Image 1: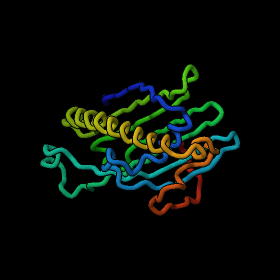
Image 2: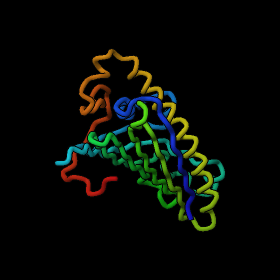
Image 3: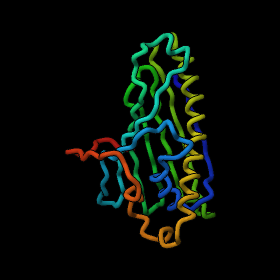
Length: 204
């Protein structure tokens, strides 16, 4: 049995601004644990859905009690894959993230849905996550630690998103009312990107 997390938040900004801020939220003061981001794939489907796959590198420090048990040479960086789908027709944006390494020690799978609130110019964020561990005899404390760290990181993630939103909202009106279908990621430097030879088989 894993541990589960679920939350719903009203972001008091229009959906198109939240979408733009999502792509621009790194780097920020609240997410120093995010080291790099790389776009592995991006394309538009025949039904005009924007598909993206990104690789995020994050710090992966273990708690003190875990460092005494597990190998000291375990990688200090964690690699997280993020799949996302943007539907401009319904104004929904869905993401799924999961860790690629140390997944026997702890596996974290997160799904987020950003939806336009049609009753007011806000955005509804629904977030769910499952934290599990396959370490016999220690799964429960590892999962409890993972849940606590996840909650802490989500608080920082929201502050980072709000920071990106504030920058966007302070920009000139021409930037706010332009063509939002074009990714705003091109306006910031990113680590070197790689282009896959095949389209990823799995998306959210």
